[in-house]
Image (tube, one colour):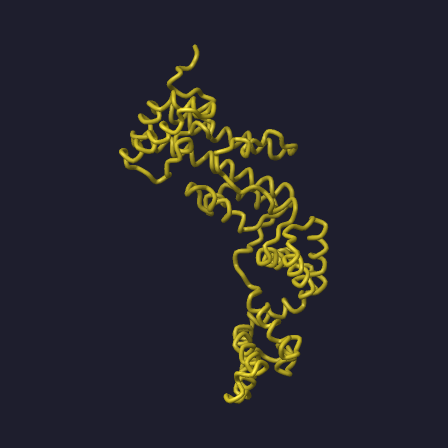
Length: 338
């Protein structure tokens, strides 16, 4: 027997285009029946001449209203809508993990921010925790350790003074305790006569002292300034790329920079190197081709964005099937409650 024209088919129930939350762009937290009816009516009026899916939705308006004003059915529709969003988020994460073998924590934030309030970072982390268990590295680039703004300010001011770094500025070795270096900053600051403080060089000296207090606040802040100095060649390259309008790099370039950082820091800790580079990529607004250039827009306005059937990855295909099964279970639960 064919499906009734005024109710969704089984296939449509699993399609984000025909989920009533997504189709009518209803806020996931909206529970006011009158507001929901108004939203549906407004969309209906906009679709007098629309796409194939919009014309089909016009046939489903009555069912949509019945479901969305019934608290039980509405909650079930909400759960399906969330799962559909979560499926897409997971496919984005899977695709990146499959390409690179690692993930940035900021990826989760981007996905959550672009999910129209449907997902939290925690939702996405829980949905993809199996990837981490399977060995995909998760690099936390949300905790900023390298204060690039401070360091660049220092570099610019030091050029005025004719010094290359804070240690040369203070005439002290970097091996001194951080408390000693902090105290020396005050000595240098007070050495500038108030009467001459407005002269360009003296003004720069006092401004450098202000930034130096941030650097020598404690052992950790000093540690990351030292890391910045050791890897400065990399950041100078990133800065030049930004000045030239180059916002992407090939994977082979990224790997070359990784080797430079490893050598400069004399470390074999690839996770730490990845975290350091991630901070630099974020600050200089650069992406690695095959990595951060994934589409993080989970909008359903263009169904082509969510078509993953052309992927050549067996892993992705299997994961997609598993996700479809999860969605079908939610729908089955709904049908059994009817």
